[in-house]
Length: 250
Ligand code: SAM
Image (tube, rainbow, N blue to C red):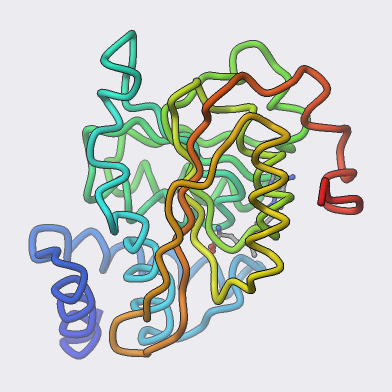
């Protein structure tokens, strides 16, 4: 990473209230790994140091806004909770890898339907010495029905994966009651929020916060939506592969 890239990383971190100095070396390694891998396969649409630093690294860390992940080990009044976090649709590892660099206390499962992306996440985690990242290949619709996965997590994070009603159906089955979905999105329309709120209610969730903000340095519009699981998800959800996306609940 160039001195300019490092300065942007630290500036972005400061704007989020984070001192990224201790992790700067790790982010530099991740930049190298991502750049080398992207030259060989289609991993991410972002190219170049500035875009990757700001729109992958700093953007990923915006999931820490509001402190919703701060007490992942204490969800549900400490009843068997272990800080289990699922990154649903992690792609090349975002937000999973930046989050794991900052939060060794969290155990992060990085799930994606595309095998080559998940394999990259596994290689990157190993190279970075991140033993708190577990790569997982599969579709959320299928894994969300497996007994080891369903209700297995304290938090689900997800960035740029689907519209809110689709996310609610895919993510809520993975959460324990009392757990939180922390969804990172671009601008959110009132229509998407309304449909997402109704879909969340259908699968046992309630919207707790909608945090609209701008990404440090770039000024791009972002929204962090927090949904709490307040009741078990009915057995019929998630519907079979592809249906939540094709026919959203609302
Ligand atoms: N979260 C990453 C990021 O912010 O860079 C990747 C975003 S990419 C636009 C969306 C990812 O979600 C893709 O890698 C896709 O394979 C994955 N995805 C979409 N629907 C999925 C599903 N139902 N189950 C598992 N992965 C899914």
